[in-house]
Length: 193
View 1: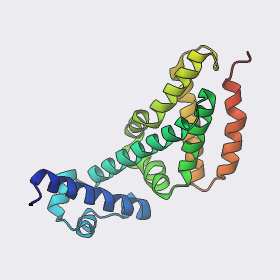
View 2 (view 1 turned 120 degrees about the horizontal axis):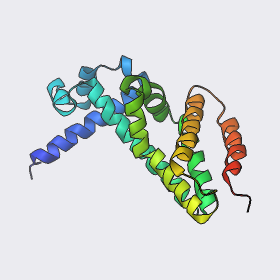
View 3 (view 1 turned 90 degrees about the vertical axis):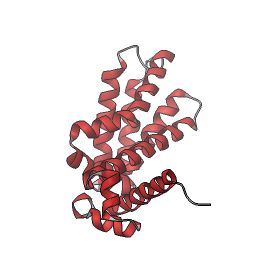
């Protein structure tokens, strides 16, 4: 049975994303050449441009995919716990651990903020990890575990701290020290009751 055009397009796109991701993670955005990605993926340069318009377009799609996977990984770690507080701790720890993943480190934490720009990078973060954090904090406020307060500024403060810590880890910082700092920081959010 012949592969239909939609399946063929999807397979081409997937091959480009996979190869692009490997190269962006290994070599960094500025060292990757779209024509070489296409050749290694077994497609023409024209097909690469058809699907992504440019190297920046491919990178943007790879960033979105890695960011989505990271958000899912953080959520999955959080969901392993029934207790809302432990969900927050586990999700935060999973996010910090992402700084040691070579693909996350290079693609999301090092290259994406400069290549895409801060606003676009933050928007992608908001769609995944930051959204999960805001949901967790909303649940903790509703449960009375965290003092009743507007969640958005709290989520932004914690998200900013987490992003900075993950960047620090990605650049060679001690992940264990970051986890210990997190364990000292988070209890300050809890109500005293």
